[in-house]
Length: 223
Length: 223
DNA sequence: TCGGTGTCCTTTACTAGTAAAACACCTGCT
DNA sequence: AGCAGGTGTTTTACTAGTAAAGGACACCGA
Image 1 (cartoon, helix red, strand yellow):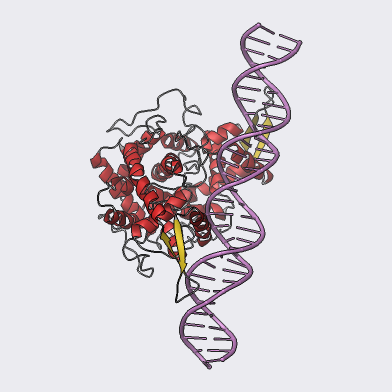
Image 2 (image 1 turned 60 degrees about the vertical axis):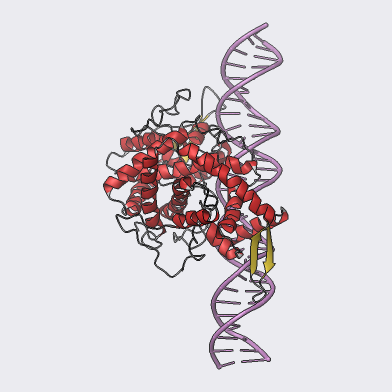
């Protein structure tokens, strides 16, 4: 809402991620830059994503720092998890720009998108599931989106606890209008990787995500 | 802070991500599950991360839905960006568990971690940079961490606007105590991928992150 | 030396999310 | 029928972040 100019804006990243601790924070901020001196040269054009060589990113710097302090620890996981988190943070920050131009937050777009792609009405709890957010959050968003005329709700005739939400024509048009723009932008972002590598990356992420989503298996960490 | 029981808690993901719109939200929530019917079987054990084949994750389902509704759009970017976001959300949710056991939020740990890995004092603004958060957020966190005796501050003698923050012994011990546990947990999470694939993934993410961090280059989306 | 300008940090006002309690309603059991 | 218990949704109270304004201070140039 504030920085809808799309520019990363230097140090005010909305949500950091991070390698600071090395895990990853999708919502807050990590700390991973300042690896070398402390604080990048700032003027240097930053290593180019030379197709082929994996260049030096902020995560690499952070990992280096940790290795110096704790040479005995295997910092391997940071290289993946830190990067996933950092990528997510930057993507979010940058990606939201096209949405904001349309006056939507990502969360709102996700909700509308869920309705659009399923093609049918959804109840608030289904939306919460689809959208990976709490029911309370869905309630709030629905309120706003309804006021803006993008969705409508009707009560279930059988079970009066239940509501059914559907897109209005305006809502559908909005989603359909934004989506191609979003995809176009995303292609730009991914352009640093050739299409073969993109497939590779998608496949690997799919495996990782599969593991993460396999509810059990990760629930209880080290413990 | 609230759910320090570590259990992912089903549908109350802290920050969703997502493929709903397809971009990715590190802070809110997306919508990508419910691809097939709508809403996963819920009882089904969810596809196992069979080592080798890229299984079917929630993102794949969402992408399928979009392709059905908009067969003309190239949904390729979603396969990567959606997964990055979703992974970040799940990692965060799960990973925070070990931290919470220690009574820290990720943001707090990131801050402490930045101090620990750089090995020297940092000013609040340096911490903000390291941590990818706003100065105001750092101020708040420092206040809390100081009260808890994990960090201390001293004023700069030359420039009285500046403060220097350093870890107390307790702070350092806390970080050093948590870090190995975090890494151990992360290795568990990544165990689904053999080490060769992990290297591959780290390399690809590094390229992507490089592109994202190369400030210019992505600033102006499609536009 | 003194004012303008910029920097560092904090404060203020506000937003968007969560967890848990509260509601309203269904459903199955007795 | 009537109630116990469960489910779908909303409400409440609160948290943690942001942006922007504010205060203190340094530094430069006249």
